[in-house]
Amino acid sequence: MNENHVHDLTDQDTEADDALRDISEVAAVEIITSACVHLMSAAAVKVGLAEDEETGQYQDLAEARKLITSLAGLVTAAAPEIGNEHARSLRDGLRSLQLAFAEALPFPDDPGQAPGEKYTGRVS
Image 1 (cartoon, helix red, strand yellow):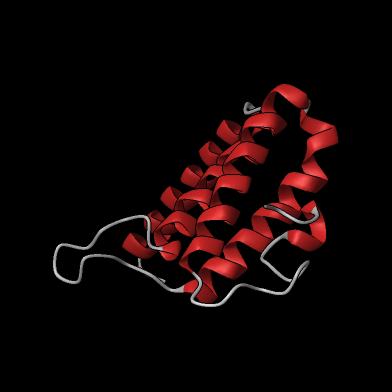
Image 2 (image 1 turned 180 degrees about the horizontal axis):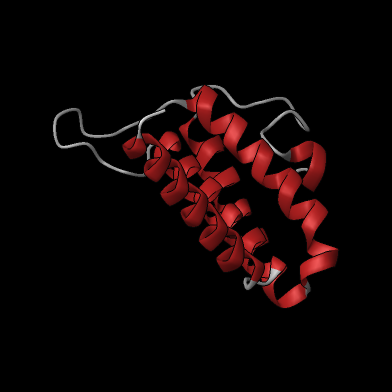
């Protein structure tokens, strides 16, 4: 190994140590809600709620289905751990995405087959 490569590895180790220290100071509820917000944002784009200048919108309902189902699982599992105050807003966002997804479909899903419904129950 040359000296520059060893120096690069040492810098990477220092950065990793700093990241671990930083994450150790963040409450679990913040990490969970942050993950949920990322899933919500991605799902909103895939449902078609964001517009593209050229085509008019981005939409990929197969991808949106995966994201919404994952979000529903996380919100359902995390709700007892993060408390009602945090869970309520996440459930509201999830429900809005589920409804937007249903509106975007050309044909409705069968009852209980819409994204996330195995975790949340029927959304209407």
